[in-house]
Image (cartoon, one colour):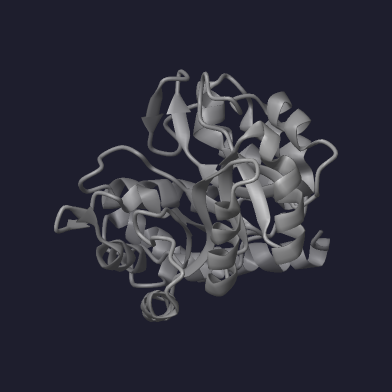
Length: 287
């Protein structure tokens, strides 16, 4: 956990480094590439994007990683949890190197990847870990079958890559905090929860409590706001206590990724994502 002195330095860094970006956002001007991301880099954890938010930027009928990276750069985003529609999982070494070069040019680091299914005894369970290792990815967000955890115990320790169970709304097998907590009990500490704040709200669960319950077993956060447990919305217009969530994550010493995920306005979400980032920045500045 950071010392108070480190926390004060982080806050001063946010204030000094992000005022210009915040002013640009408030005035509706385009962000200078990297401006907001540079401010976030001084936050207690990394703030970035679940690239699914930019799935609507397409080329030839498919989500375009090049276009998504261009939008990310314009918004000053430097960290992704990538979804496979942007970066398909592959064993091709040349394709991996080309993807890494593309990411480097955009100044974007892929910290997480998913959501990935896992099944008991499936030899394909190794492939996401092998891919993640080659890409330098820190964690996989996942939807594992309940009987696959013994397999995952071995894989997370072998590859030293975390797995966060992704909750996916009402009726999903991992829709409740206590269900996930029970599922990971007795298993490797590298298996935990990828907190999808919006889906927990839809399931009438408290994302802040999730951060408290899972502590150092949080592997990824999807920052998503929901109103009345039904409607996805811009951060700050729903019911998510994101300042409280940030405080708990910071208090727990969380250094991982908080990935903004915005599911609305699929074809052109950039302005809405910018508004969400502004709200997140304000909350971070107040830490």
